[in-house]
Structures are given as C-alpha cells and as structure tokens.
Length: 76
Image 1 (spheres, one colour):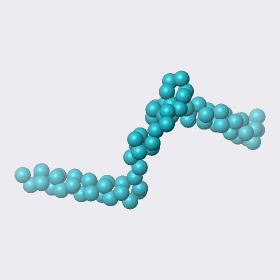
Image 2 (spheres, one colour):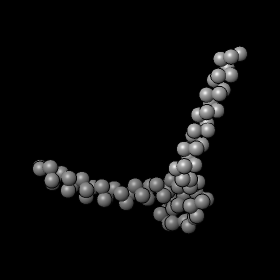
Image 3 (cartoon, one colour):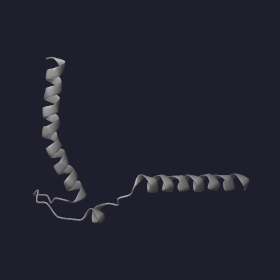
C-alpha cells in the first residue's frame, strides 16, 4: 500500500473516531446523559474560561512566592 493510500485511510479513520471521541468527551463533561441525550448547560457552569495573560500572571506570582518561601527556609 502506498503512502497516499495510507494517508487517505488514516483520514477516514480519524473522521470516524472523531464522532465517538466527541461523544465520550461530552459524557465526561456531563453534557450528555448515558443514553446519549444532550443536556443543555452553560459553559460557565462546567469550566472556568481564562485568557493567557491571566494564567501567565498567576503562574509568575506563584513562582515568586515559592522562591521566597525557600529563601526563608534556608536562613533559619
């Protein structure tokens, strides 16, 4: 089997499994029940949406706090 044919077959598989994976993810998040019926929920109820700046700022602040704690431990 040639490279192009394998790529074509992989694309077909990817499309087929994408449907199953999406259903599995929705079930994990609680967006669908066990029978496959969709439950309408707001995204705010399921997860927190943050922008990159907020996450970077939080990580930077927590790293500074960790560094200060270690400095205090070594002095005592």
